[in-house]
Length: 125
Image (cartoon, rainbow, N blue to C red; front, side, top):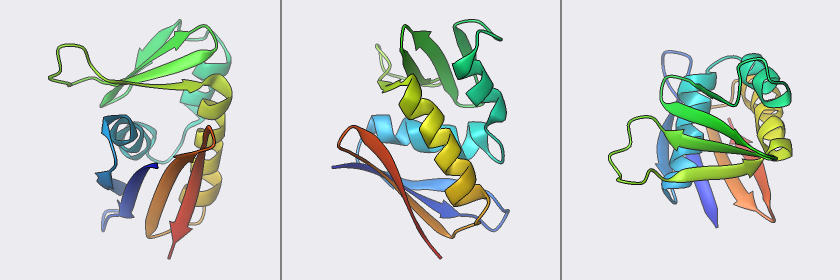
């Protein structure tokens, strides 16, 4: 099972503690660094063509590929950077869940699991 574990920091944000693979690390870094405290800009980008087919945050490059969103590490040292590929629906859902289950509740620990073709957020205080 693929997962990423995120821990709240003393500075009010989150950091990626560990992950089962590179793809889940990319997701964790995207949520903790690029999204931070609000996902509305990335959500809008995913649902419209307001910024074109590609954009980036601090650590993550995002690209639209038909009905998919591809996330890659901007600073990857791999010859062919690993991509996290998710459907647009999965992308919008993880951003919505991040806002509602993590940012609003300010939980101390977050585990995101990928199972049955869905990203599921579990939180602990």
